[in-house]
Structures are given as structure tokens and as C-alpha cells.
Image (cartoon, rainbow over all chains, first blue to last red; front, side, top):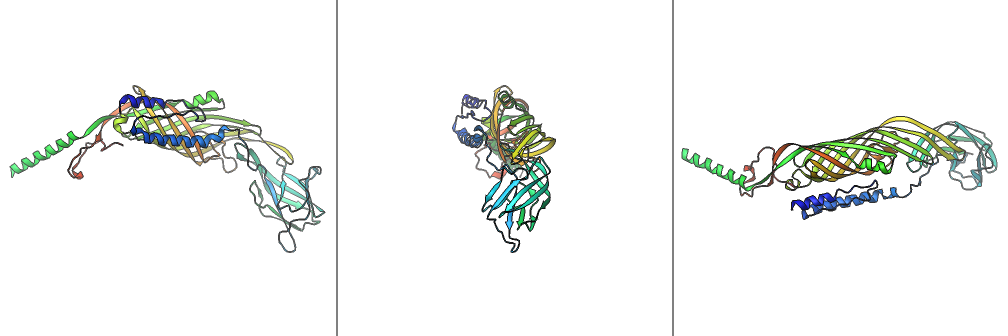
Length: 187
Length: 246
């Protein structure tokens, strides 16, 4: 290959790319270089495709709330039994109900207050009212660059009245965004 | 007996002389190269929240292989509606570059090939503000500065060419694979020096280098071996040469 051809070909590679790799040009001359040039071009094309979503506005598509996931069980038979009617709201938040006489709730999702070390809920199972009080610690957890942070919790204690609730079993104390059961409410 | 020996020695000398005459060789300069990246400062002009400066030094082992050390510094800030994030630190990469050009094409002035790197990053991260909204309202908090260590691996194809005597330009694409980002499972770094977005297992990047080359030795490289009918085990090459280029 003549020297000037190789030199001029390499000069063409001297294109300053921008921060999203949009303006990287590649051109080689001579049969000797073509295979390598194609390989590099394909490599760059793959990278450009892989990084393209970053050019669009960033959006959060992940679950950002860590709920206490509660399942309901029949205390007599120890089998899962979804209430016919479930009402749930935070103490002092009766105008903002999480569930309002809802049927078929499975599991119930209870949001904890990350600003406090404890919070209480009023729970009405099939028309009978009880109160749940959680004591916990909270810590930040990064979901993603797009979504930012959420708070995870560790349950330290759980108090409840026993009007219709027989007992509550804590199956997993760590409250995260992962879809796994945390408590079993036997009634 | 003495005559037979003399003829034999003469024949061997003739054969070996013929072999040398049949080969093509070039003198290939081995170099120490030192380069700085200009892509980082160029990106900083467009994005004042992302300052990356880096440089490398490499040492040619032979006409194909060189050993490379790279180092750099990153100061990165990111802010959106629910958090602010800062990271600052240094990174080092060590690895090997493989020149895929034939020695007679490369001549020590051109490089087109691929490199492999191991990367180590030591950095501070801080989240001065974060907020999270749920049923109970908005909770705000902050995460104080902490030091972390990240590890990653890179595949780096690229090209470089000598535009003036002992001065090269060229780019390197970087495909990075995360080994460990530090920070534990809850506070993974959003971005860290040398690697980029800590939430991704694979990242891409690019550098554009201005390089100063310092020749330190020449080796004789055989670019076309002799086309001999002799058995291969009788071929010998001088020290510091290679049988054939790519």
C-alpha cells in the first residue's frame, strides 16, 4: 500500500467525537485494512445503539416504594384467606384511605413513614377494626440514576390490637421493593 | 577427512547465507509513548458537571505488544428533582495493547489494534440532598461523604497515527465491564471515575489522545521469511526478531 494512502486514511480517523459518540467516523484504505475497519465499525455501531437510550429524556420505570407486604390467613386452618372487605389507612389519615372496603386484596401494601421511627395503621377486616403499630429503622437505598433513592426499613417491633386479629407472624423484617411477603395476619 | 569437513562447512555457510538473502526485514523502532486525552476536557466544555482528565504511558515490548499504564481524575456532579449527587476521585488502568498491523505497514508510526485493561478506581461519593415521597408525605435526607473502591475490566480497540515526527493522534473506544463498584448493595455509586455509570454492568466510552513518542531501541523484524525447501528445524533467527508479521 502506498505510504500516502495509509497516512491519509489514518488522518480521517482524527475526528473529535462528542460526548454521546454520535460523530465518530472511520475510514480505511487498502484491502489489508478493510476487515479490521469493518470490525471496528460494527463495534462502534453496537456501542452507539447501546448508549442511544441515554440521548432520550431519562425516565424512571422501577418500583420506588418499599411496602410492608401483608398476607391474610385463617387462624383456624392456617390457610391463606383473603378478606371480603379490607379498609386500611394511617392513623390520623382517615381521609386518605389506602384500601376502602376493597375485596380480594392480596397482598395488602402498607407504606411506612421514612421520616419517623414508627407509624400506625387502622385496619378493618370484614368490618371489624384493629390497629397495627410498626417500630422500625429506615435507611436510603439507590434504585437507579433515573429514579433516585427510596427508603428501606427494618422492622424492630410490631404491636396490634386483637379484635379480629388472632396473631401476626413476621416472615421477613427487611422491607424492600422486592415483591416478597413480610407479615402474615391471622384472623 | 579434512577435505570432506571443509566442503561440509562451506556448504553450511552457503545455505545460511542464502537464507538471509531470501528474507525481507525492516528495522522497527520500539517506543515509549506518553499521551493525554482531549475528549474529557472537550466534554467538560459542553457539560460543566463532568470533568475528566486522563493520560497514559506505554512501553513497546516488541512490534506487536506494548504495556500500558493509564491514570486520571474525575469530578462529576448530577442533580435532578429528587436528589443531588457528587463524586470525585482517581482511577488507574493497566494492561496490554496488541497492534494488528503488519510491521512493514505499522513501521512504528501507525497503530490499529485492540487493548485489554484492568481498572481500579478510588473515589468519594456524597448525596447532599435526597427526598422521597410516599403516602405519609415527603421524607428528606442526605448521605455523607464516603470513600469507595471500584474495579472493572476494559476492551479497547482504536487507532493512532504519527502526524509529525514522534507525535501521534488517535482515538480509543472503551467497552467497560463492571467487576465491583463499591458502596454495597444499597448505595452503589451512580457514577465513578474511570468507569462511568455504576448502575450498569457494561459501559462505553471514548478517548482521543495526543501522544508523544520516544524511540528507545530498534529491532530487526522479518517481514517475509525465506522460502526455503529446508526443514524448519534448521531455521534460526537473530535475537530480537520475529518470523512474520500479521
